[in-house]
Image (tube, rainbow, N blue to C red; front, side):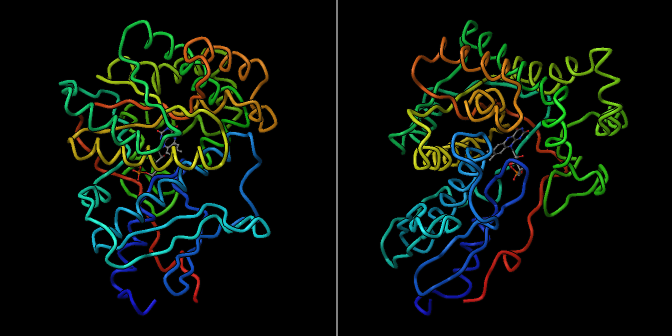
Length: 352
Ligand SMILES: Cc1cc2nc3c(=O)[nH]c(=O)nc-3n(C[C@H](O)[C@H](O)[C@H](O)COP(=O)(O)O)c2cc1C
């Protein structure tokens, strides 16, 4: 790696881990070998094929790789990325070859540290201009595997919201999903601090009067009791239905198939789109539950069969053959005072 300065490599890897991940936990290790960055998964292999956990992992890995490509471009360095390069090493997720003096600077590099998930309930307008929308469409179409659908017409939005509400409500009444949701939240950080991994409560956009109640709901017996009075419906409405109704734009990224490469490419495209949104001074919240819980393999991961079936049928009716992967709302809002932090690059680095 002598060809590339330490500072340059540090900058590239620092930008890599600024990529989003569903629970703000990058399960990866970097190892530098000459001009190659090897990225290994910290577990023996990716979650099972066909399930939603693999999709979440691949979307995030796609975002990591896109950040590397964009950050490297700042130094004119090109990248050649190979996903799962060695079938005998299933935890070797990708190999990225760096190529000096090979590319133009991608101006999106400036947006990488500015991009954050915004969960404020109210995203205001004005709506995007046609030029802004075209820019986002172009970002998503960097991958031929992806299709970007805007759900801004009232009928489309109503249809999508019905499915999104169902899935987000399930996160509060299904015990497995409840555990998954609340175990990612770092209540130990308090409401006023960030943390370097997991979700700091202050980044969730929960209004101060509701915080104590929300924190209590992390205990399953409390959640179950509250659900007798319809708390899961209220949470699904507050967490998804209301913010999406208020948002100027609702979008969906879909793919033609669920091959590793197609989902990984969608992760790359989604990251470009999100950085594009950031450069337009707008904010975004990902809300993929209704798409990923519709996957057939999701049943084996704890999604109730009737929910999986309803979601799959619902999306089929509105999208035809396309497979939904990621839903998101976009608009304008003040940044939150607390955002999810990251561990330092050194924590992710294996010595060569
Ligand atoms: C694949 C994926 C799924 C996500 N799902 C959700 C979600 O369901 N709800 C949500 O509020 N944020 C979701 N996020 C946002 C992450 O929680 C967020 O990116 C992470 O906590 C890091 O924070 P940051 O985006 O501010 O850097 C998702 C992000 C990714 C990449």
